[in-house]
Length: 161
Image 1 (cartoon, rainbow, N blue to C red):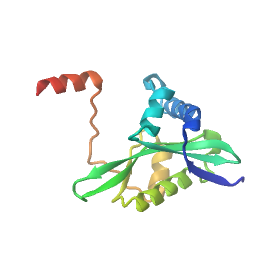
Image 2: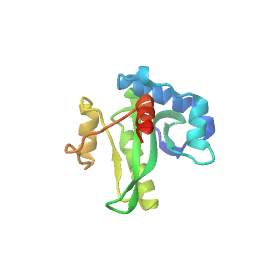
Image 3: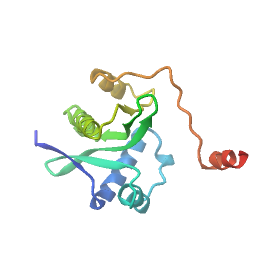
Image 4: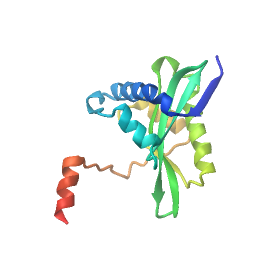
């Protein structure tokens, strides 16, 4: 196996990031929800105040996986945490330790940044990923329910107050 390199993304990686975002969305059967473009990613990841960060896993100079993360905050801990928004390895490269290497890189980053914890979501039907995460020692948070409102609902809520 060729050496694996995990590195922070640069603006030059934007086309590769868009490819991975679409590949992940297709895998999750959510491609119809992808509206991001290169300029939006550029502002979000490389603007004056980045909102998120991305890393690429490369094997022999070929991008084979990626992760996107940002910092959240726990009032109970009084510390920020590292939230993994996306983690994806191309299907033909799975089972080679690339996902584990990405999560290990993120764990080191979280520790260096003084984070109190790392968190992420997995779709209920994604048994391969759930098993993978559990084997790494991750705990499921089954007692919590995820809520979401989108732009139209946000406007309605904002107008209520």
